[in-house]
Image 1 (tube, rainbow, N blue to C red):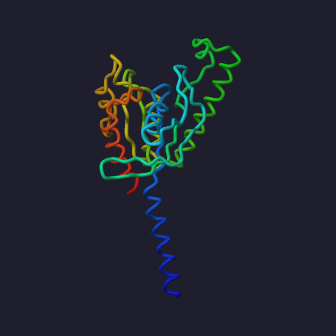
Image 2: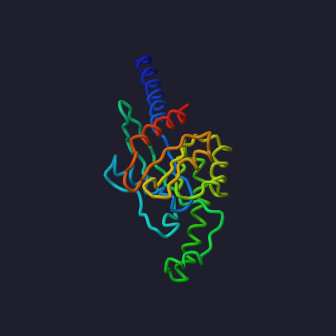
Image 3: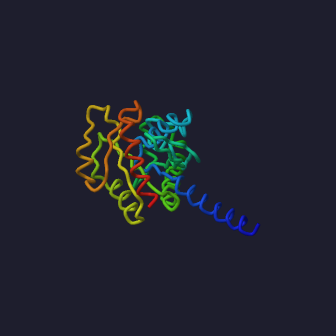
Length: 215
């Protein structure tokens, strides 16, 4: 009986160890309006049928960290469970007057700016809880920005595995090569989260990222 108890004890331990490796906390980071929530929504719809959050052309639509606890993703013969963590857009400066351009009233714009600022603080804190990060960049924008360099720098300092997604490849001004040139040490995958373009390659790269995170 003692032997059986010991076996059961170690069986549970190994089971939990295996389970922890199977579940990966995946953060989505990047500047405002790059498409983080759109990509998180695309993944959730692909594998759960539901979305994780709302999107808008107005910057900082996502002002609080939102997550989906368990999303089982399959690629070829492999399956992994991910906790998807969608974070507010990172910015070096938030001015409420920028929101007035989108016809928001002053009080609403000020409230949005305050919430967005707190959201950035929370997003940075969440880096302590993620195993890997997908950095989502707008492929129509200049990648050599202070925001992008700050984000990547934080991830490098914390030794968090990174996959860079060049979003909005459906746009005429899309230029993936600029992003590849800006961050040559990272894998870059071009997609359109809005239309689901090239998601197969994204999932392949995601599983490679997960492998790094589990080491």
